[in-house]
Length: 215
View (cartoon, one colour):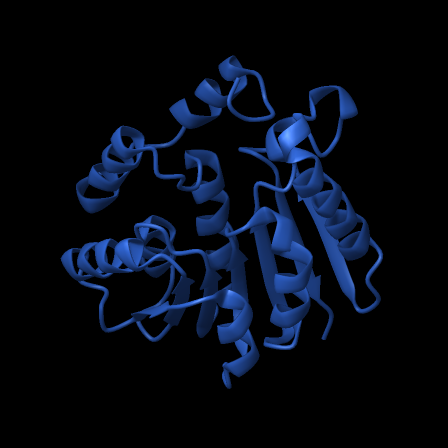
């Protein structure tokens, strides 16, 4: 079991929704063959629903990879919604930009190459929706930088927060992952009681947290 739910549950949920076509289908195959982590199908569906409800004007993503989730977010938002996505690996930046061009979203999606810790400190824009899917052990630091960039009424979504169940159970923790798990637990505890924000933790995919900034 790769994620936190039984395989039959994952398969059933995924069977309910139409398969992706075109560039998204190609990227799913590329990610599978090349072992590139992308959001699970059920998490992608959650993103689509949240974005259609929120109708953001500006989106920030931390962790571009091959551009899969950025393209999903572009497809799920209005034409005037701009997306800024940050990726530290130069090879992934090149691949993502090519994929975004193929998907015809280069005019809406800007890929920034660099360390998110530095870039987040220097962004001037405010965002309505932020998606974190980067180094799990740095989520708390990323989050605190991101809330300074989040508009009132804005939403932050973080992927992989239950980390194959290890965040919730010591019995599942792999020794080399102890530090990441410890930091994820601290992160979830922090967002669950943060004044001025409301959070929920959704047990789909590898665990997703959703945080709303009160207006």
